Length: 403
Image 1: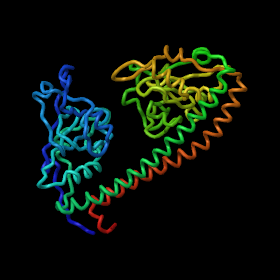
Image 2: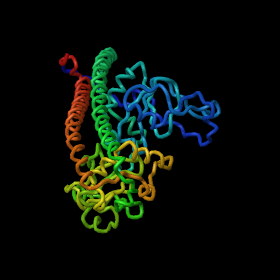
Image 3: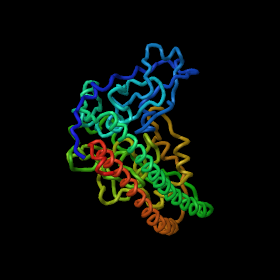
Image 4: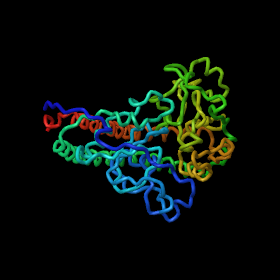
C-alpha cells in the first residue's frame, strides 16, 4: 500500500516538558500515595505501560511538582539510560523525575499508543551530538519528525501491533524460560559435583591460591581521546556476558596508552570477576585477550599451581561463593566488593588432578548446555528482529500489503 502520510513534528502533536526535581527530604516520601516515576522504574518496563513506581510521595512531597496524566509518554533525557531508548507510557496519573522527558499527546490528533510505537523507532543517538555525556534537549525532542496517518489508520495499526506484540512476548517468555532452565541445570550440576568433593577438600581463601589485581581507576582512567577504534581491548563489566568476554561494544586503547597503564594487564588463563556494580559476573581470559586491559569494575585472579583456573571459574559461579559476594557488598549508588574482601573469599581446594577431572566433567556438560543457550539466544534475537521489522513495516504504511 502506498501512502502520502504527512510529517508533523512531535512538538505539534504533544506538550513536551521535563519532570520535576526529586525532593531531597526523606520525609517527602513517608506514607506517600502518589507514584513518583524515576529512570530506574522506566528501565524495569523498557517499552509499554507502567502502573506503579518504587517510590511514592506524600501530599507535602508533591507540592510544586507537576502531576502528569495517564497516557503521558516518558523517555530518559539525561544520564547513561538516555541511549537505551526506553519508551514507556504512564498507566496511572503520577509525578516524574527531572531525568525524564514527559510527552503528553494531543488525543484529538494522535493515538497515544500509536505515538508510543512510533517513538520506539527513534534513536536518542540520532538526536544528540555529544555521545560521551548522554543528554537530550527538549527542543530536539520536540523537533522529532513524525509520519502521520489519519486517526482511524493509527487505531487500526495499534490493534494489529498490540496483538502481534502479545504473541511475540509469549514466545519470548518461553525462550527466556528455556534459557533460564539451561543455566539452572548447569548451576545444579556444579553444586552436585562440588558438594561431592567438599568432604575430601581443604578450604582456603582466594588469596591463598591466587594473585589478585584490579583494573584502572579514575587517576589514570583513559580519556575519550585516548580510546581508539582498534588497538588493545579495554574490557569493561558490560563485556562479561554468560561467562565469556563479549566483543560487542568493546572499547580499545592505543598501544601507547596501554603501555602507560600500570594496572589491569591480563594473561591468558586469568579469571575475571566484577567487583563493582553487578557483583560476581565472571569470565576466563583466552588467547584473544592476552595482554589486554581492564577498567575499574573488574578484578583479575591469576591461579597458583594449587588451583586450576577453570576449576576456580566454576567455583566462583557456585551458589556458595555467589552468596559470599552478595553478603559482603557495600555501597548504595554503586555496589562494591573490595579487593580485600575478594582475597578473603573461601574456596574448596583439591588435588590438582582431581580438579582437572571435575573440570572435564563440567566442560562436557557445559558444552551441551551451551548449545541450548545459544539456540535460545538466537531465538530471542530472531524475535527481536521480527518485532523491529514488523514495527517499521507498520509505521511505514505497508501493513495492509503484509496482511
